[in-house]
Amino acid sequence: LVFIENGQTYKANLSYTPNDDTLFYAQWSEGFRLGFGQFVPPAATCDVDNDGILDGTVAPFKDSYDSDTTENYEVGAKLTMLDNRLQINTAIYRVNWSDIPLFVFSSACNRGVTVNASEARSQGLEVETIYQHNAQLQLKLGVSYNKSELVKDSLAVGNDGDRLPSSPEYTVNLGLQYDQELWGYDTFMAVDYAHVGNFYNRVGEQGIEGGDYGQLNMSAGVIFNRFSVDLFGHNLTNEDAITLADTIVPDQRVYRLRPRTIGFNIGYRF
Image 1: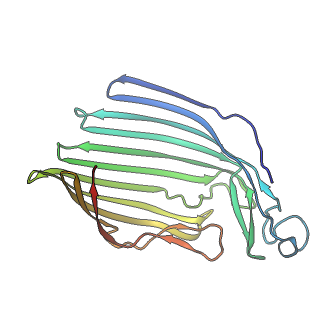
Image 2 (image 1 turned 180 degrees about the horizontal axis):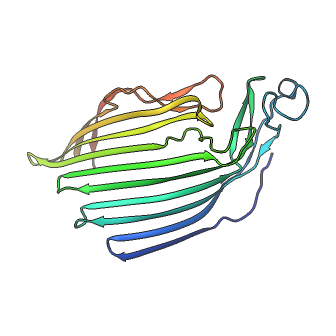
Image 3 (image 1 turned 30 degrees about the vertical axis):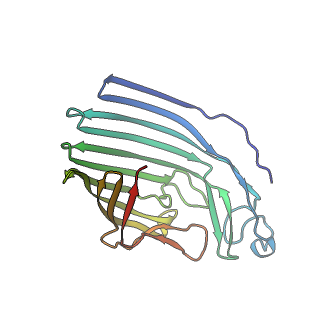
């Protein structure tokens, strides 16, 4: 099956810099993903009544699905203050998503098809700050809020207002790094923490719940001329959480956060 489409996508951007420390911008763009062919489940077991619909669902039997498209809006600012020691980047965005390709599974025959279903909207806010307290100490803070939901009823997927799968509403990350010369060598210590809000692997907050976890990492290192050695610890609190739940296979397989991991790296610069 050869899938061919043609068309155009457009993008427009406007920026304003009233001074060297300030940038405001606005952007509009279009996007798409090409549709694709697919294997149709056998009608003898998945369309017993021969009505062209996957048994147990309202999804049509089709050997392909169409392209999905987006229309994207973003406004934001990039600011530098306090003699270049503080940077603030912020953005507000909205993405209108049409002809969403979603996999519809039939428990009647343990098979499924991908269909173009409904329309959705994703909108939110992102803020990132970097503060250089002095030559040694740097602090970072990032916060994001996202609301992703259907904006049109779909019998195959869900109803207007249903939350999209795998879309946490909140994420927060904090970071701190301290650099210092010690006994004539450059050294550093860093700690970062990230929190991810909860999400579900099915539309409308159904299915497997994931997210809702925090991850703490730390590292420290030293540079000896051309050599570097650093010690790291990832997920130091040994958080056990689901980072992704499969939406296609029926056996509820998931991906989990890597357990506490401690190690070291040795490098040499040629």
